Image (cartoon, rainbow, N blue to C red; front, side, top):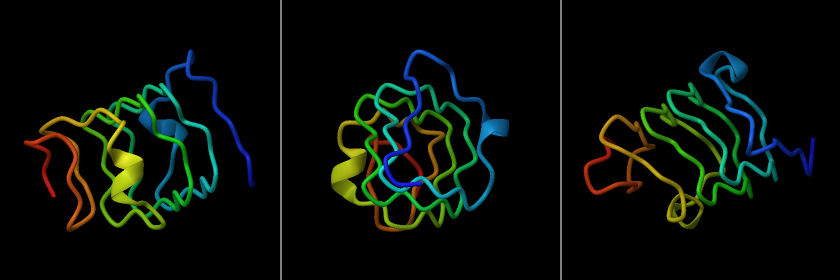
Length: 92
């Protein structure tokens, strides 16, 4: 599924993603991923620029780097993999 793309103009609801989703090289720029359950998702090279990850669960996400998270929006409800930083108050 290399090069998969989502339209940033369409909201992505939590039910759209299941635990362990394979999103290699997915373009999720500007995507509304609020509350998405991305536990165990494989996000290698996924573009998360301006993606809204508020309240999203990325616990145990694989292939994710800190650099991918830097341009994304996280909040205190965002659950990140251990050792990652999002918003200053995001939960690890």
